[in-house]
Image (cartoon, rainbow, N blue to C red; front, side):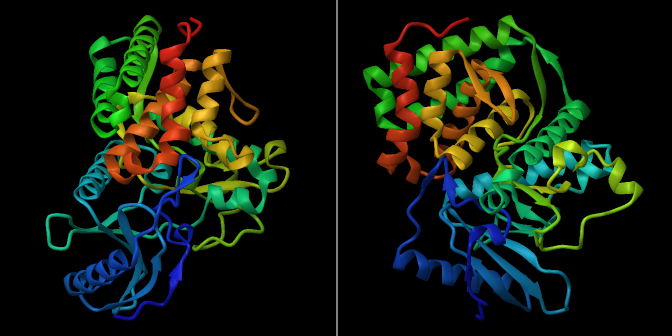
Length: 377
């Protein structure tokens, strides 16, 4: 097996190195040996080709870029390391397929990574996707923090188009119970502290508050990404080198809703070229989750504030505020936080063993709920 070298995950487009502002522990020597074996077995399944790069990832999915021997374009090969990771990739594959079949605007469909091959029931399980062009938003912000405003305009414009094409309003309590029940159960099942007195009190208070807010007020229901953080957005802007052709110019680019121009992009237009990592997607999810996820992720990337710290502040003030996204209701912040922590716990059991992540991201929010007066209505 020939591997061109180990590269940062962001260069492979699709696996995040950071979870809620905290690094996870990478695989040790034994894990790396197992990964080498996975790649050798995957190569037998996929046929002739060469590995161009292997991600130094921190998730339960091994990601590598492979170029077929026939000279075709490179593909992204995802090899799950655990049963949870297999199920997450199945959810991602299926969500992308269903969403692509339902979306009418071709510009939106072009942002979804196409499945080239799926062998998630094989040994080893493998998912092969196309490599989308562009630079992840978190990498772009690390290089050029002044692009936070234009990036937010591009991202929120994309959300408006996605939710507008697939959404409607609802106060359906059964739908709300479906959103909350499974995710709260994941916390209780995976984290021992959540089964104690303080954790249980926090979970019950959180459920009561969110159910009341979501059934008493109309809630926009639409296709939701579920992890709409800058790192899952691929973009292209002047002065950045994406892994694809230059951004479109001329009339087509000027009329595209995915390209930001004018005063909001004084530093140069940003074009969304892809949206990856759909494992937490829902066809009938609360649309506000995506906007609040983006706001909380910006808070970590730009200010270094963990999700737990930001949500506790929102609990005490009654709103989530970010200059790039505006003011969001407390229920939005709590939904995004619940999606984030339950999604991470469901995709990898290592989160439940990561005491720093639990202490900084999960426990403070439930502790605040358990020990404080009811949040403002």
